Image 1: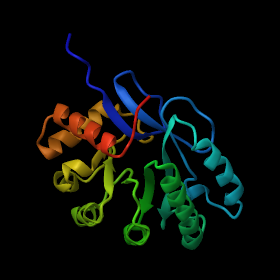
Image 2: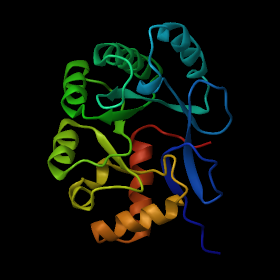
Image 3: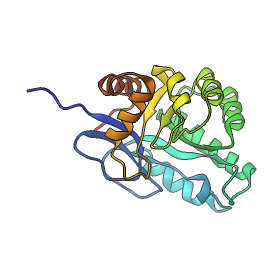
Length: 212
Protein backbone atom coordinates (compact mmCIF):
# COMPACT_ATOMS: atom_id res chain seq x y z
CA UNK A 1 0.00 0.00 0.00
CA UNK A 2 1.34 3.42 -0.97
CA UNK A 3 1.72 5.65 2.11
CA UNK A 4 -0.50 8.74 2.20
CA UNK A 5 1.38 12.02 1.84
CA UNK A 6 1.19 14.17 4.95
CA UNK A 7 0.87 17.85 4.10
CA UNK A 8 2.46 20.15 6.67
CA UNK A 9 0.26 23.13 7.49
CA UNK A 10 2.61 25.38 9.45
CA UNK A 11 -0.11 27.79 10.65
CA UNK A 12 -3.86 27.30 10.81
CA UNK A 13 -6.93 28.37 12.73
CA UNK A 14 -8.88 25.37 11.44
CA UNK A 15 -9.29 21.76 12.48
CA UNK A 16 -6.73 19.64 10.64
CA UNK A 17 -7.51 16.74 8.33
CA UNK A 18 -6.10 13.22 8.58
CA UNK A 19 -3.84 13.92 5.61
CA UNK A 20 -2.29 16.93 7.33
CA UNK A 21 0.25 17.66 10.03
CA UNK A 22 -0.94 21.05 11.25
CA UNK A 23 0.10 23.61 13.85
CA UNK A 24 -3.09 25.07 15.28
CA UNK A 25 -2.80 28.69 16.41
CA UNK A 26 -4.08 29.28 19.95
CA UNK A 27 -4.52 32.74 21.42
CA UNK A 28 -3.81 31.58 24.94
CA UNK A 29 -6.23 28.71 25.44
CA UNK A 30 -5.10 25.22 26.37
CA UNK A 31 -5.45 22.85 23.42
CA UNK A 32 -4.54 19.33 22.40
CA UNK A 33 -2.60 18.42 19.29
CA UNK A 34 0.23 20.43 17.78
CA UNK A 35 -0.22 24.05 18.75
CA UNK A 36 1.46 27.43 18.74
CA UNK A 37 0.71 30.02 21.43
CA UNK A 38 1.30 33.75 21.47
CA UNK A 39 -0.22 37.21 21.56
CA UNK A 40 -1.27 38.43 18.11
CA UNK A 41 -0.14 42.04 17.51
CA UNK A 42 -3.80 43.04 17.02
CA UNK A 43 -4.45 41.91 20.61
CA UNK A 44 -1.57 43.78 22.25
CA UNK A 45 -2.61 46.22 24.97
CA UNK A 46 -1.13 47.74 28.12
CA UNK A 47 -2.09 44.65 30.15
CA UNK A 48 -0.17 42.26 27.93
CA UNK A 49 2.24 41.14 30.64
CA UNK A 50 -0.47 39.37 32.64
CA UNK A 51 -1.64 37.52 29.56
CA UNK A 52 1.92 36.68 28.60
CA UNK A 53 2.43 34.90 31.92
CA UNK A 54 -0.31 32.49 30.85
CA UNK A 55 1.28 32.12 27.42
CA UNK A 56 4.62 31.32 29.05
CA UNK A 57 3.13 28.47 31.09
CA UNK A 58 1.14 27.04 28.18
CA UNK A 59 4.21 27.17 25.95
CA UNK A 60 6.02 24.66 28.14
CA UNK A 61 3.63 21.86 27.14
CA UNK A 62 5.08 19.23 24.76
CA UNK A 63 2.23 19.70 22.27
CA UNK A 64 3.12 23.39 21.88
CA UNK A 65 5.68 23.17 19.11
CA UNK A 66 6.03 26.87 18.23
CA UNK A 67 5.65 30.35 19.71
CA UNK A 68 3.24 32.80 18.08
CA UNK A 69 1.76 34.11 16.16
CA UNK A 70 3.37 37.32 17.28
CA UNK A 71 5.02 40.24 15.55
CA UNK A 72 4.45 43.76 14.26
CA UNK A 73 1.57 45.16 12.20
CA UNK A 74 1.92 48.77 11.07
CA UNK A 75 -1.44 48.86 9.28
CA UNK A 76 -4.03 47.56 11.72
CA UNK A 77 -5.23 50.25 14.15
CA UNK A 78 -4.16 49.03 17.55
CA UNK A 79 -1.21 49.21 19.88
CA UNK A 80 1.64 51.56 19.05
CA UNK A 81 4.49 49.95 17.07
CA UNK A 82 6.81 50.52 20.05
CA UNK A 83 4.55 48.45 22.32
CA UNK A 84 4.13 45.78 19.65
CA UNK A 85 7.93 45.60 19.39
CA UNK A 86 8.25 45.19 23.16
CA UNK A 87 5.77 42.31 23.17
CA UNK A 88 7.49 40.77 20.15
CA UNK A 89 10.82 40.81 21.99
CA UNK A 90 9.21 38.94 24.89
CA UNK A 91 8.14 36.23 22.44
CA UNK A 92 11.65 36.09 20.99
CA UNK A 93 13.07 35.50 24.46
CA UNK A 94 10.50 32.77 25.15
CA UNK A 95 11.27 31.10 21.81
CA UNK A 96 14.96 30.96 22.66
CA UNK A 97 14.38 29.79 26.25
CA UNK A 98 12.11 26.91 25.21
CA UNK A 99 13.95 26.17 21.96
CA UNK A 100 10.79 26.44 19.87
CA UNK A 101 10.48 28.28 16.53
CA UNK A 102 8.74 31.63 16.19
CA UNK A 103 5.71 32.17 13.94
CA UNK A 104 5.57 35.83 12.92
CA UNK A 105 2.82 38.18 11.77
CA UNK A 106 4.54 40.91 9.73
CA UNK A 107 2.65 43.71 7.99
CA UNK A 108 4.62 46.66 6.59
CA UNK A 109 7.35 45.79 9.07
CA UNK A 110 9.94 43.81 7.11
CA UNK A 111 12.77 46.18 8.04
CA UNK A 112 11.78 46.01 11.72
CA UNK A 113 11.72 42.21 11.73
CA UNK A 114 15.07 41.91 9.95
CA UNK A 115 16.60 44.45 12.33
CA UNK A 116 15.38 42.45 15.33
CA UNK A 117 16.68 39.23 13.78
CA UNK A 118 20.15 40.67 13.24
CA UNK A 119 20.21 42.16 16.73
CA UNK A 120 18.98 39.03 18.54
CA UNK A 121 20.89 36.46 16.44
CA UNK A 122 18.34 33.77 17.37
CA UNK A 123 19.14 30.08 17.39
CA UNK A 124 15.51 29.17 16.72
CA UNK A 125 13.81 29.45 13.34
CA UNK A 126 11.73 32.53 12.53
CA UNK A 127 8.83 31.86 10.16
CA UNK A 128 6.95 34.74 8.50
CA UNK A 129 3.43 33.43 8.11
CA UNK A 130 1.07 34.37 5.28
CA UNK A 131 3.82 36.02 3.24
CA UNK A 132 2.41 37.98 0.30
CA UNK A 133 5.31 40.33 -0.38
CA UNK A 134 7.22 41.01 -3.55
CA UNK A 135 10.33 39.07 -4.65
CA UNK A 136 12.62 41.79 -3.29
CA UNK A 137 11.17 41.36 0.20
CA UNK A 138 11.31 37.58 -0.10
CA UNK A 139 14.97 37.84 -1.00
CA UNK A 140 15.67 40.25 1.89
CA UNK A 141 14.04 38.01 4.46
CA UNK A 142 15.45 34.68 3.31
CA UNK A 143 18.92 36.13 2.85
CA UNK A 144 18.76 37.32 6.46
CA UNK A 145 17.89 33.76 7.50
CA UNK A 146 14.11 33.73 7.92
CA UNK A 147 11.61 31.19 6.60
CA UNK A 148 8.55 32.23 4.58
CA UNK A 149 5.17 30.53 4.72
CA UNK A 150 2.78 30.95 1.80
CA UNK A 151 -0.99 30.83 2.16
CA UNK A 152 -3.92 30.96 -0.22
CA UNK A 153 -3.10 34.48 -1.42
CA UNK A 154 0.57 34.55 -2.38
CA UNK A 155 2.73 36.40 -4.86
CA UNK A 156 3.54 33.91 -7.62
CA UNK A 157 6.76 35.68 -8.57
CA UNK A 158 7.94 35.49 -4.95
CA UNK A 159 6.96 31.82 -4.76
CA UNK A 160 9.33 31.12 -7.64
CA UNK A 161 12.42 32.59 -5.97
CA UNK A 162 12.05 31.54 -2.33
CA UNK A 163 14.82 29.01 -1.60
CA UNK A 164 13.33 25.55 -1.17
CA UNK A 165 14.95 25.17 2.24
CA UNK A 166 13.23 28.36 3.48
CA UNK A 167 9.66 27.55 2.43
CA UNK A 168 6.49 26.50 4.27
CA UNK A 169 2.81 26.32 3.30
CA UNK A 170 -0.21 27.20 5.44
CA UNK A 171 -3.99 27.49 5.38
CA UNK A 172 -4.27 30.20 8.07
CA UNK A 173 -8.01 31.07 8.29
CA UNK A 174 -8.84 29.98 4.75
CA UNK A 175 -11.48 27.37 4.03
CA UNK A 176 -9.39 26.21 1.07
CA UNK A 177 -7.83 22.81 1.85
CA UNK A 178 -4.10 23.07 2.35
CA UNK A 179 -3.64 20.40 -0.33
CA UNK A 180 -4.99 22.87 -2.90
CA UNK A 181 -2.64 25.59 -1.66
CA UNK A 182 0.28 23.16 -2.06
CA UNK A 183 -0.84 22.45 -5.63
CA UNK A 184 -1.01 26.17 -6.45
CA UNK A 185 2.43 26.89 -4.99
CA UNK A 186 3.90 23.84 -6.72
CA UNK A 187 2.50 25.07 -10.04
CA UNK A 188 4.06 28.50 -9.49
CA UNK A 189 7.41 26.89 -8.68
CA UNK A 190 7.11 24.38 -11.55
CA UNK A 191 7.63 21.40 -9.28
CA UNK A 192 5.40 18.54 -8.18
CA UNK A 193 3.20 18.67 -5.12
CA UNK A 194 5.01 15.60 -3.80
CA UNK A 195 8.36 17.40 -4.05
CA UNK A 196 6.93 20.35 -2.13
CA UNK A 197 5.55 18.07 0.58
CA UNK A 198 8.94 16.39 0.99
CA UNK A 199 10.68 19.77 1.16
CA UNK A 200 8.39 21.29 3.79
CA UNK A 201 8.69 18.11 5.85
CA UNK A 202 12.48 18.43 5.75
CA UNK A 203 12.22 22.11 6.66
CA UNK A 204 10.01 21.35 9.66
CA UNK A 205 12.49 18.76 10.88
CA UNK A 206 15.34 21.25 10.48
CA UNK A 207 13.36 23.75 12.58
CA UNK A 208 12.97 21.18 15.34
CA UNK A 209 9.22 20.76 14.84
CA UNK A 210 7.98 17.33 15.87
CA UNK A 211 4.36 16.53 15.03
CA UNK A 212 2.63 14.41 17.67
